[in-house]
Length: 169
Image 1 (spheres, rainbow, N blue to C red):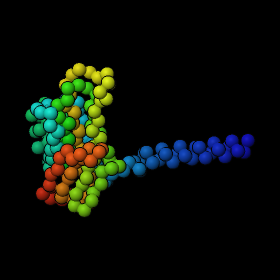
Image 2: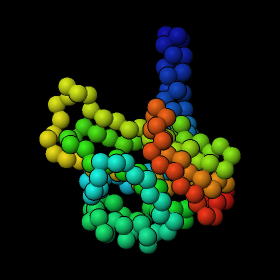
Image 3: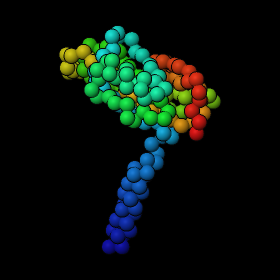
């Protein structure tokens, strides 16, 4: 009976510890303040090429959203630091997905290396036969950097840009 109580107490402690980490966002990885603030399956991309856009202010980002007529995105999470918008480009079917890999995203020197999981469906996957144009919007993190480089999970560079005024911590 004592062993069961000790085991139950230890198990409860682990659950409480994990819940605390989740609530405090500990272990989320990545630079502080970085957050996905929008995602859409249809971003109105005109070509198959991937693109990375930087919007330094909310008004420019909202103008882009309005021009593309994207109902899934809005500029309210983009205040202060600016937004990086990563577009996958036109894809012939469903099953494609973009996801920020915050644990792999790091600030090295004056460069923010942002890593995105660029997922394509398997060749034999059952997918919808409708064109998709995935994109994600990421609020830039706190830190001192003036360059941003976006790569996929295997190191292919998807875009790069300079920020005229580095973000201060």
